[in-house]
Length: 420
Image 1 (spheres, helix red, strand yellow):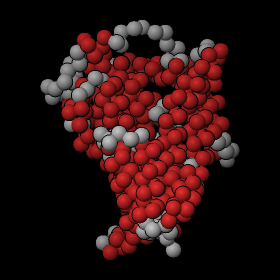
Image 2 (tube, helix red, strand yellow; image 1 turned 60 degrees about the horizontal axis):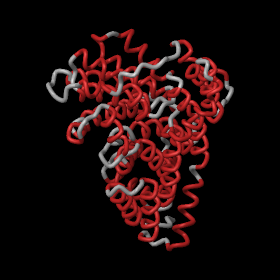
Image 3 (cartoon, helix red, strand yellow; image 1 turned 90 degrees about the vertical axis):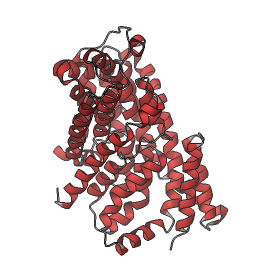
Image 4 (cartoon, one colour; image 1 turned 30 degrees about the vertical axis):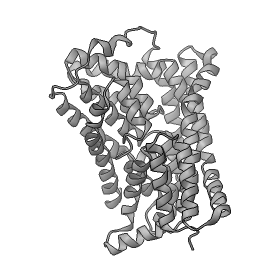
């Protein structure tokens, strides 16, 4: 028996979206939306608050892992390791393959544990320099970075992956590996679409765009730069390879420490950790807010009504996985919030319908990358700002981003249907 009505849950979600659109902080928007939804759903104030608290509590293990992941992200950024990896990839592939190089570089930076928006911002100075030499417009080079970031995001130890693996109760490494083929598919589509945009005469890169990028800074060697990410990959791979489980809470900060030592910056480790904490604090707070509304939605009749609608339309239950990821990420304009709400709300329903946990989590995760970059979210503005793009120019890229996200989602669904 549901504690709240479907209508109440939808009203709460709509209220959260409206609040985000009017620039209320997303965490507060989600908390207020949860409160409104619970009361509108007939639960009463006491039940609503207790359900919100329970929902937030369910996020604590994810939040703890995300907080420790900041050590790796902060070290990769501050030591210049992330930039060095990107620079090396671009250098090896050359100017003729600039679009592919930028997309692959962003994908790898994101895949090794740097948040997708930070990955784009990190690669942007290199990408703009290449675009200026090759005469490519800014939309083409930004799409290459965003698409590469989306591809890397579904195979990375990032907050969205952590939240989805927690909700479905699956090993994070297994969830990451499940979407490798969809990630490669998204990368290929990104390169093709960005290549098309290079032929359009719009928004060229100017000297002003490069002006603040000209300061030279010492970067570590490539081998030192990759030490941290390699250690993380090896530690996380121990479970599927040797049956030894190393939790991301341990693997990610260890990778950060190794990176600092390998690049000769061990004495600066405390500063790097503080910098990384600043980068993950916002996501952690967002997840607490996300947990409150996920708690209300999970305790409502929404999941049962959605299943009923799918049955009426003769659609299989597994379609709920990608659909939930797409819709929830669109509502919050966030991959992390979308994947979290969808996973927390529908994990039980999907598992009860016989969908394997890893496959369900992978489809939700891929679906959350389709409409996650809408204008009411921070990703839209952070990525546009990284290349000095206007709102109108940035808006024009959304259909291309949707195509990239849909590619990985469709491939994830196909892999489930054929039993891979």
